[in-house]
Length: 498
Image (tube, rainbow, N blue to C red; front, side, top):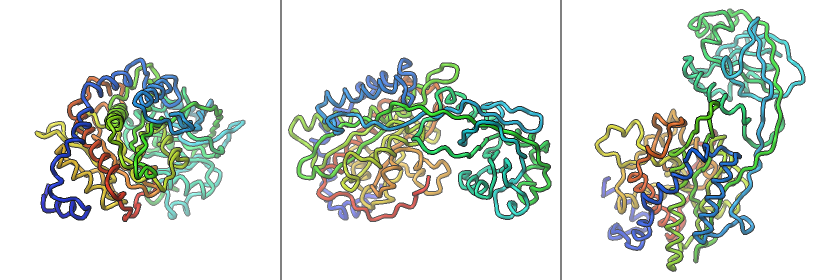
């Protein structure tokens, strides 16, 4: 860290050089965040008995009650009409029947194709499967897509806009390739096979007749009886050279309500109590596999959830000692992140405290492990920081100041780039606060071999490093909750579309 730069930043924020000395009061309460407590809480939440804490599952409700009981015991207030739960009105959509036939081949769901669209049909629809390739105006001028299933080649592109363009051109549905290699497709197919028995969790929406079938590049070649390399070339400029195929499909859907909750614990502040700092994590994970193996979700996001618990305990302990934060703090554990950031979307659009009074969101999602980038590094004391300077020129500096004062972690910003191909900024719950121009900071440890695997277990958590990361987050939260002025919103949200 360049101290001259840091001093300039500190002075701009009204911080003197002398204030880089540690505040013993903060240190006292930060030290209540311990490896032993983090391990105890995580051992429960990520146990096999919790069966992966799937959204709306009985074990998900057990996790919600565990968190609520913890906040109640700390003396935090239940801010939802005196309670700790905000019900999130989710439904489970099950596609009871999905069939796709091309030529003489009856394709098998979650083996030959994955259904990623929507629809509900009383009987099968007969049509043709035509090849469009790249979904651009030039190809659309060459291929008649009206009332047909349309083969799209979308490797390396965001497919949502392409699908909309083809559907707007009159297509009945889409068969799409979004990645090359059978192994990549098989991983997605296995995930959908696991989810298919429980249905797709989301908000209830009007049914769209929008059949979208995802296939592998190899399967697309088989369907059009054309070698893959030849199909890729045709996709660019002469899709009409690929012979169409007879096809039929049917989709039948049922919808049932799901019981799911966000969990909230509230600590009222003193002279600035109308302003609220939100510290969040998601407590759901992805349940069990189709063969009964448990996705424990110890890092994702058991680690973030128990970090929020320990940070809450540190603030509650200080409050019991008569040292309350100036601003109020909402400890928010959301549901449905794994299903599309659903719980945080619902809270941000139905906030318990006005969005205008929400000063910051600190989001913690996966802080218990060491990723590929640092696994062989000499210094593994790092954390990735995402989103901290997009909306406010203050927030990044405040976090860096607290890091150099208290924890001395490597703050790595590589995934904060707008063109980050991993799109991590868009993949956790801070996103739903930033869309309302609330300055956010997202703490993350990166991905590893156990990410979204049944091997994401407690025994692999790096508790000393996780504790140090939690200390940094606590110190940054303490600063944000107690400083004279809330962080300025002097930037522009340049990442509005997921």
